[in-house]
Image (cartoon, rainbow, N blue to C red):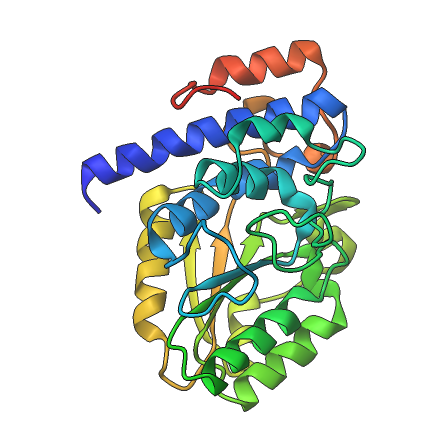
Length: 282
């Protein structure tokens, strides 16, 4: 990728991280850890990879669709949607407020542009994404379906039922990604319920598997580009994306502690001092 493009995307990502820590701090509630770790993924997806339209409608005809399965990382989703033109950036200040469209887990009844499913009940997003992908095929729509999942979410049985179904039915217009940070709310994933060799598992289930460092703009962007080239080849695609929970804020990295804990006033300032304001705070 060109250096100017990398610089542009990293600049966008820095501002998104500022949004995340400010949003969860304002309500003393939310999930900063996973949100910070997935910034490069969302930035790449919405600032170049995906063919999408901020003039949002639920039909999504002739455009790529994205489904967030691990809905608790809504802060990064909301920030990127707002800064990609889906709704006013100033609305980020309403995060988790009563009657806000920006609830802790994305929902559809508030009508927030960009949100296609209510998510947060883990394990369901892959099934929905497969349904959308099959609908695209039935309608001769050549667009691609994207989805994102947490690694702890893979402890849900429905994921593996969906995995079998997608491979058996050649759902090859689907690119799914796993945020593999190795941590979940109760501790390290390996201590809660080890996932074993994820690459080997997804390959055994009949998927085309790719791996990358999800905290490198260049790597995740290039991997997503290459994944697009692999579509329509008979297999669904899974990207195992290694990330660091809390990436970009030094005291949040390396622990599951910040899965769902908001920074206090002092911690917020420390975080903001580490994150450059590039596009203007809301």
